[in-house]
Structures are given as structure tokens and as C-alpha cells.
Amino acid sequence: WPLTIWYRIEEFQLVSLKIIAEAVLLCSPNYVNQTSLPLCVLGELESQSLAFSKPCTLWASPANAGSLDLANEIAVAFAADRETAGLTICTTDDRPASATHLLLYLNEDTFVSDERLAEQVTQARQDRLPIVMAHENDPDLG
Image (cartoon, rainbow, N blue to C red; front, side, top):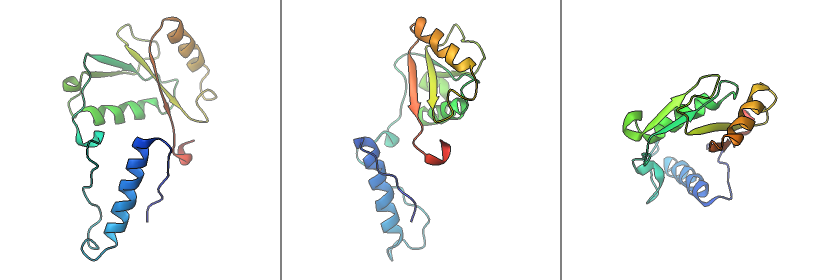
């Protein structure tokens, strides 16, 4: 059985329930020879095509370790073709003029690995650049 973390947020609870249901079904005689099942919950985001209502340039600063990996995961979730989804990812050291959002990947090492990040976040706040904060929930990733 895979380790399933239970969260208080309803959308995450649905994901946890789906993982538990899949694990139970894979142990049943009808599915014992399969390694995964294409389960979905009615209305879940994974079953919908996602796109931005207007073009979005997400700045994943190199000073924020892990933000580029997360930005790429977001891009995959929105569309195989980023242009169709309206998403551009920028990874420059300095904030690009085209940035519409700063992606701030948060874990236990966020502000100890590169002091430039604190300066970038401060500047983004002063510029009123929206900051998308993503808190890491995997204990192995901090």
C-alpha cells in the first residue's frame, strides 16, 4: 500500500480517498494483475482542461530552489502546449518586465539557501507583483 497523507483541505482529501480506493481495488481479484487504475472523482481538476483567462508569465527565480521544478509541474497540469494554456515560465535571475506573477516555492530551506530570494520577494511586494505561494507538503522535500 502506498503511504497516503491525509489533509484537512477538501480537495486534497478527495485525492487521498482516490489513492486509498485504488490501493484497495488493486488488491481485489478483478484488478490484482494491474499496477494502476484510471480513477477520477467527478469534477476534479485532473479531468478538466485548464487554461488561463489571459496570458500569464510565471517567474521562477533561480534563487528559489525547487521553484523551476514546480513551475514545470504547473505547466504540465495546464496543457501540453503552454501557449494554448496561456502560460510562460521565466527563470531569469532578475525579474523580467513581462512577469505577471512570482512563484514562491516554500519549504524548510526556502530562505536559507540563497539570500537573493528575500530581496526578490521584498521587491515583488513593493512592485505589487502577485506572489503565488506553494507550500511543500512532502516531508521528504522539506
